[in-house]
Image 1 (tube, rainbow, N blue to C red):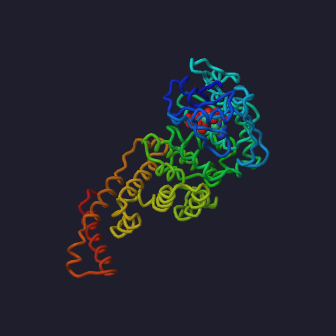
Image 2: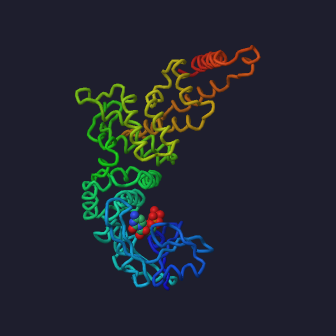
Image 3: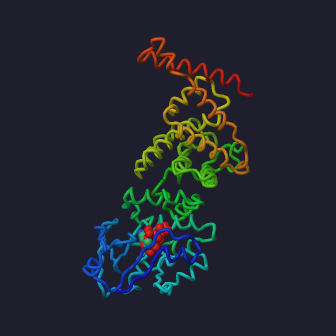
Length: 409
Ligand code: CTP
């Protein structure tokens, strides 16, 4: 049997990028031979094994053919007579379809190296279309390698467009899609992921609520970039620049969905967009079964981001409601993430990226003031149950009044 390193490990080594996990392909072997060598079988779908010591993935060379919609409908063929070239041709991109032996000799039948040099994300063959997840993967790679100057080859973009129009994307499971989305959002240029999806028509299928923001104007005074879609991309870009976690990036992407529902005659104003957007945010959250912390933060940021921007003008009672809504006493981290998302929203505006955002510290100070209210003295006074809750709220309100009064105007 011959063993080759394949996929991302070869690509990233040639790009001079750190290689995190290595995939191997085994040519000329049977399942029985692999088991006899101590490899542990994994994966119900394909003959894939884990190395007994390194734990890395070794897959038998295979060909694949699709015989239905979605990811389930695959017929694969793995046997010792499947060649390396046959295994590589079923892969997504030429830069992912190179193999390397233990002497670092490259097998590159589909010119991945040439495309690496040309900075092109190009599909290997029409078999690309057999897995619609690849539309998201290409957009993710575009985001990851944008800083190196990579773009999607026009013919690949065309194929992605056809796939998006064919209805195949709808067959993707929420879990597979979310994994790609989450990884893409954590790249250094997540806005490129959304841009590429939009360009090939996939955004309209996957997240029509985000797609609908393009072409929707906002008031120039607050939004020199005017377009709500452009703004959303800038907010995401800022979130990456500031190394925000996934929760914040997800909330940034969805914060303004309500603006897509504003009747044209109300443009460029978006009255109550925070509230109107909630059902859309919920729908996107559920469509991809986003993790609970992402879902929660997106909804809270959607509902309260304008409160964040107006923090310095809020009445103490409104500030208190805001802090209560976030349960800032038990969930301080979530409130920090809310503040971060608001700040990214403020910076994601053309020419305003460097502006200061005093609201952030003001909100932190308010949270500290409310949190400093001690419960023990109230218990000692005999408050219980609902009354105790009201008494705590009363004390917190007092603390916030004092905080606001003391804050520099
Ligand atoms: N692959 C594919 N189509 C997919 C998923 C994977 O063709 N839908 C192939 C590609 O050749 C890819 C390899 O399987 O390079 C390994 O896949 P994976 O580990 O998911 O990705 P990597 O390319 O290693 O990229 P990353 O650095 O993002 O993990």
